[in-house]
Image (tube, rainbow, N blue to C red):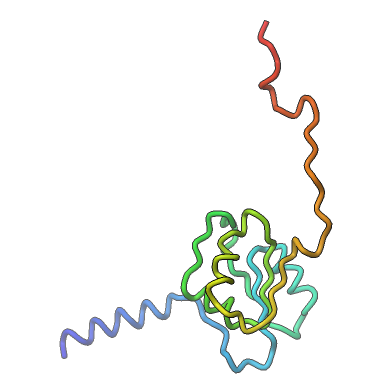
Length: 132
């Protein structure tokens, strides 16, 4: 019995420190956004009609983000998952191909016309000048 008590205390502390998942039976739609601009847009649009969650912590780099199991469950269980798309969100495509999201998925890059990057003389940033 003396060995079980410390293990239970440690388990309680670990679960208390983890992020809360929204209840599956919540009446309000659950929206999960990967980065702050998408989160802010969803929060402004939904107002009090939905619960909006920011997946990446503020300041985290999207292209190097490692989702936790709780993050993956959030994406799978939410009613709407919003992400930017593109090269920096390759990890999102990996998650989406491995799970079956319950709700809709919005890839924001699909909502705009993309422009080709133009290369103009002088854009190389100082590598082309000669030293005299």
